[in-house]
Every structure is written in C-alpha cells, then in structure tokens.
Length: 300
Length: 300
Image (cartoon, rainbow over all chains, first blue to last red):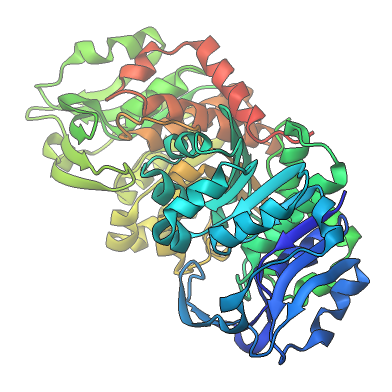
C-alpha cells in the first residue's frame, strides 16, 4: 500500500568530526522517502523555494516517489545548520531559516486523499492536523514530534495525538511529554493520550516498541564510525512505515520486523553525509543488514 | 561445575526514593553468590569483622554456598553507605568504611584451589591477581572492575587483565579504560588487553556481549519501579557465571543464554532492598522471566 508523508524538504549545512557539507539535501520528508521507497510508493507533501536544486531529488523520483504535493514558492528553501560534538550524541543548532516553510499551508492533491498509510513528520502539530483532516480514510497514522512542540504547542500536540495510531519519539521526549522519569511509566501515560503503539528511539541504545504491556527491544547497529547522524530518525520512520505499508497488515510480528527495518535503514543513513548512503544502497544490502540485526539478539 | 568468587561481604546503608535500610546485607561476593547459587555450587573468599550477623547468610548456606573461605577478623565489617537520586541512574557514596577489608589478604582453603570457574569481583587488582595465582588450573576467569581501579591502579589492572577470559564492565568504564568515545572501538582496544570476551552492562539499556567482531544485545527488564539498584552488577555476574558453570561449556550459544540469565537475576535484585528479593525467588520464577526476556527480542 502507498504511503503519504508530510514534512520538510530542506538544505542542510552540517559539521561533524568527520567532515562538513553546505546546502546538502535534507529534510524529514526527504530522508523518510529515501527509506520508505525501498518498500513501497511514497507521496510527498512539502514546500521548497525557487532556489531548490530539483536534480537532487531525481533519484527519489526513479524509486517511485511522487512529488505532485511538493509545492514551489517564491523565496528561499528551508535551511538548517548544525554541528555535532565528538561523541555524536550532542548537537548544536547553528541556524534555522524557515524561509518558505514559514507560510507552509499544506493542500493535498486530490489523488493523495485516499492514501492509506500516513506519516506526519516532525512539523507544527497544527499542520499535522490539517493534513490529517484532508485524508478520507487513513488505515494507519504515524506521528513524529520533538521537544520544541511538546514544550511550545502542547495543546495542539495533544489534539493531534488523539488521532494517531503510532507515535515515534525519543527517550528524552518520553520523559518530557509524560513528566515521568521512568521510561516505562512514561510510555503508559502517553499511550493514554491516543496512540496504541509507541516507538521509542534510543540512538546508540537501539529502539523500543511498546504497546499494551508488551515490549520489543531492537538493537542498534555497532557502528564504529558515524559520519553524520542527521536524518537518522526520519530514515528510521521511513523504513518502519515503509515496511508496514508493504506488509499491508499491522500486527505484532510485522511491527517488530518494521522496527528492525527502520533501524537497518537508519544505520545506513549515518554512514555518510546527507542522503549519500541512502542513495547508494539496494535491496540486497538492506536484507543482509536486516539479518545481521536479527542475529544480534538471537538466543537458541 | 563449581564457581569461586572473591569479593566483599558487607553491610550497606542505602537510601533511595522508595525507602531506606541500615546495615543491610551487601557486598559483591554476597550478591554474586545469591544469584550463582541458583545454578551451581559457589565458594566464597572474603573477610568480615567480629560484628558480622552470620544468620544473614544462612539462606545462602542452604543453597550450597560454601563459606570456608570467609575469614572473620577482629574489628568491624566493611560498610558502605549510598544514596540514589530520583532517576536511579546516579548515586552518591555517603561513606566507605573498609574496616577489616583494608588488611584483606586472601588465602584460599586448599580445596578451593581446584575450582574451575573463577569470578574476581570488583576489588583491588592486586588482590584479584593474588587469588588467581593460587588457582591451579582455572577453566574460566571472569573479572569485574570499576573506575576507581582504572584510574587509581591502572598498571595492576593491566596485569590481571592479561590473565582473564571475560571482562564485565559498564559502558562508561569502557570509555575510561580504552580512551575511546565510541563503545565499539573501545571494546576492540580492551579485547587487545587480554580478555577474549567483553560484557558491557548498560543499566536500563541492557547489556552487550562483544567478542571478535560478534555482538549480542540483551534487553533490560521493563521495570516501572526499582527499589534499590545496589548489587545489580554483581547479581548479573552471578547469573552469568553461574549459568556458564552449570552448562560446563563456553560457546556463543551458552554465552548468550548466560547474559540473559544474568540480566534476569539482576532484574529481580533491584525489585527490593538488599538481597531481599534474591532470597525469595525460585527456579520457576527465574525461568519464567528468562522466557519473558527471550520474547522481548524475538522476531519471527
């Protein structure tokens, strides 16, 4: 089944201990699509400025990512600049220029309105809600958010959470949103806010799938050298939602596999800057690493 | 096969957000024995003062823990006092009174010298070495250590590491001992110092088994309420070494199971203060939780 993503298409300037890029392709919708398109068709809702280098997304079009919902507006494309410190777990935002994204008012092309799998990437909860309200009969709604919205627009976030099936969130955001120090108590509280299922990303410690008293732990890939963590979360979401859409059925077995596929794609993402690694990888490499993930937790 | 442990038998005064105990049974050798004795015979090498309440270790004697190597000396038993902060990941040491432990000079009873499985708990590396040199033909040597020895007596630690098969260590100690920020690069460096196998404890994030390019990830148990984390690491070691000794054969399959048994026992340990929970549990409860651990990472 098809997937719709609403999020950002951006140009990122990133510095890590391993290098530096300027105005490289980035944005949540972009990373998500690059991952999800390995599994199914993806339709993108986003906005770019008149300076956007469209040739950069050519490789996504070839993987049947549809950009009819990518609007071009006069002005500059959303730009983000960040710097990662030596342990790669901490980053400093150098600048955030919303540019055309500031006035982003997502209107879905008619044919997008019947897409069954929806990913609401990390944008203003009111925009997430606006997109969701245009969908006729969503089969699965997955949402990402961040501390900025949890602290800044809690009411709007609570509103959209009521309409969501799966929330993808990181461990510190679980604490912030629930007000609980313990991640499992926090998860319980959040599950009462709307979502049936929580995916907690823990970076180098892997990911947790939590629903109704059931827990699934996924490892992280033992990478000795991360080039650039930017986009790893959206790439995870792309692998996760992409696999679920491909499988066409949301059950515990498929959810667990989806978490591993999400982790697999994210592990590739961080190996190079921008989308460079996601551009290269093919089905065989993905399946091989998926199997390595499975082997890392196997007990006979 | 039998296990020998050298470590501390202590009286702990502990405060957590959930309560407080004074002069409660503690010490690395004690927690280790309480866990390992569910799998095999354990022989303890340690020292206590003339104030030690021997009735406290009666339950261990009933589980065939041998205390012929527990020496009683004039003076007070080793005492430790600590306080855990609200998130239980940080603790403050309030006092450490070594007392009779200060002059501890481990001499093994003759019949201990042929025990095949050895656990050198977290004590001065020179004492660890002294014990090891008295063992005739160890089959497996497992060592625990901490930042105090890594920073304070690095030369002695390096010496004993050369004679060790498995090192149990936590993630921050991997960074400290290796000088590497990345845990996997750090592990590689440490494996060059002597041990063939590394077990990295990551607290609420589970544990990692690392050897020669192979990685096994174990989850942590999703506990909403930890009463008291004291002794969890030694309890982990007890389940880990105890299971290996029982299986009698160190291979990847048994090592993985041993990590899960270690995690299982540790998850019980923290549910009550001191050894209270370890005192209660039986084989059925252990096996049931072991199976819950297995299910938490299963992918079909």
